[in-house]
Each structure stands twice: as structure tokens, then as C-alpha cells.
Image: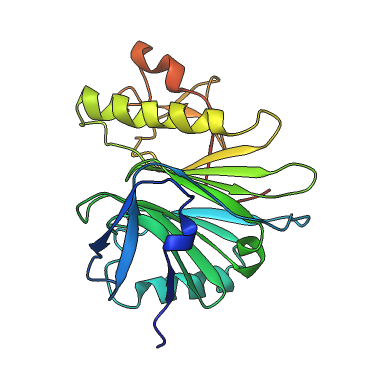
Length: 235
């Protein structure tokens, strides 16, 4: 199996703060760890429909797992796949076999999010913003409007208020980076429990439900019930 090409220096806009660190055991090289910043590139605009999905993959540290996921994308004809619990350190992107893997992690092999795009979408990717090991924003050029995707891995309901507030503050930071006329998809693993009580104030792909033990419910979370949360869908 050929070693994937790792892009680092050219991915970071001029003036960004970055440093090289050893990567986790799933890869055998060095990448660039970037403090939260924007990464921009020239992109070709997409006109066709896209198949988009999001998975919690538990870890990408296992050797060969990235290749298996790309094969599944091809089998299921997915153009964009969001990943939760990637567990890669740092932030950056890897190009391999026509796919581009964009990831955002921390200093430890915990949590982590990513988005893999196929060859068609790679040419239309305008840039990305790695906010944290729980929030990643990717912008894709489209026609007549661009597409913005935020991949998340939310804290569990048992997490403390500080972790929950930090996560939703990062979401609040990411959303204004998207133009109001452009579609925005917020997807990923929200670690929310599904109950039987229907609610009308959350935009979700499929039926809308609320569980009182979920961290998405309660008066303190009213401002957090916005956005589009979905799994597999065509855009």
C-alpha cells in the first residue's frame, strides 16, 4: 500500500501559527498542527447533487482503516463523509487515492473530527477551519451557492457545563463564517438520547424527538436548538 501524500505547509495561510509534531500511530510521518485558523484554496464550483453521510468510526488509529472507509465511500457512492472520534492529533489534510481527508484533533489521541471528500469534491473545496477536536468547518464551492459543512463530536450528557458550553461556543464561532444565503449542514455525533416526545423547534433530518436526559434539552439550551442535524441525505 502506497503511503499517502501529506500536505502541510501549503495548506496554512500566510501568517498562521503552526508547529510540526509527531502524529499518532495510524500514520508514519509529520503533519502540521494548526491553531484554529482558516485555510483557503482556489476551487472549482460543483453543479451536481452530492451524497453526504456522517459516521462515528471510534478511531482511525488502526492501520488500514482509512483505506477501508474510502472503499465504503465508493461502494455507497458517497461524495462527502463526516467522521467523529477520529483520534488523530493536530489538524491538517491528507490526499490519497483521489480522496482528501481533512481532520481536526487535539494534543492527545482523543475525540477528533474529520471530513473525507471524493475526487470531485476535492476540486471544489474552498478551505477549512479546524476550531477544535470537536468542531470542523469545511467550505465547498457550488453553483449557484456554496455549501458549508460543520462536522461535530459533541460531549456526552454526563459532561460538565464547562465542556458543554465550550462546544456550543465553538459552534457559535463557526456559523458566522458562513454566508447567510449559503446552505449550512451541521452533522456528526451529538451524543444525544432519543426519546418519544416530539418537539418542533429543532431542524433534524427525519422525525424530531426530545429526551429530558439529553444535553440538548432544558431551558439553558434553548439557544443551542438551531441548525440542521442529519445523517445520510442528498443535497
